[in-house]
Image (tube, rainbow, N blue to C red):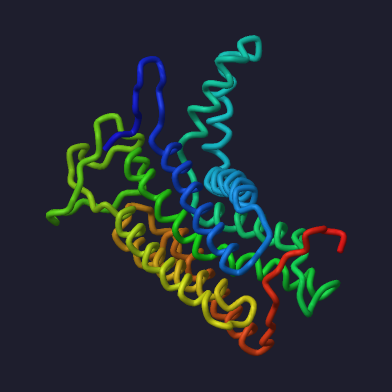
Length: 290
């Protein structure tokens, strides 16, 4: 594990580096999906806005689960005093580098994609009022394979930083040790733990392959998004059984409850898409006023 990489005076966190790499991978996949669907849109701008929204959403969701801890963190951040703004900023950045919730990031990312889908104003048989409703789903369909790839790569950043997203103690031959400077150490610190982010990477790659293949079919708008929500929810629900997250609701973790919600929404969306059978030409308007 390499929570940090030191290059001279430069102190880099591997979580941030892998988050950047995840965004790059997602941008490449989204760009290729735009190209094969003849969509005139900038994948880099789309991914950049989604990453920003996702990071903020994931952090907000994690912190708002425990307002007392959030208040304590705030008190610690401002402890140097506002007359020392640099120290306050550094304490804030140190606090911000850990503690993110998958579900909050997913919701914020989806919201940002839907907003961009609405603003893009796809050309097709449902331009106008109906297009403004279905357009966001069209963007989600196009982004689903990229989201799967980005999520999987980003999870490796969690493993490298040792931020607590690893699994339970294990005697399996592929168990891993956390570095002594990991952000969150296991109990005991030298225990072997299951590398659950690796499981999620493998699952995400398979899911991305499936969604990419589905993109070649003449599917109704919203179908691929529904499949993404269903599959990602199933994957997250299952991996939680070997994660160290506390069980809060009926023997399930917060993430498992959210994952079940994702599965339900995915099934509903797939059903609605099948019933509506909305098709849409893939082109985007070059001029958003047209």
